[in-house]
Image (cartoon, rainbow, N blue to C red; front, top):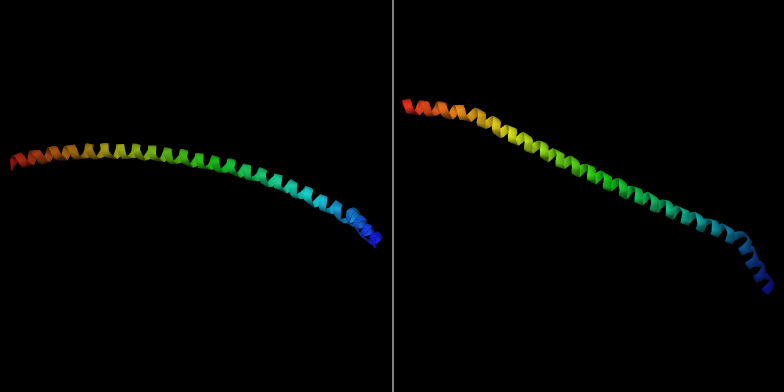
Length: 92
């Protein structure tokens, strides 16, 4: 009986163990690849977030400049109207 057990152990060691070692090595390689991909994705995500934040800041600045220009244009058009209205009110 021990011969059968020894023979079975030898078969397992000769046939199954190398495949298991190869599978284990491949699994470790895949884990390393996954870790590398995750790091790359984090770097890309951070870069994308920074780009979006810069774009938002630029848009805010542009909108502030447009708002200021619009306010100046409104004042430029309202002041003459106010003066005309004052003249009309004096005549009335």
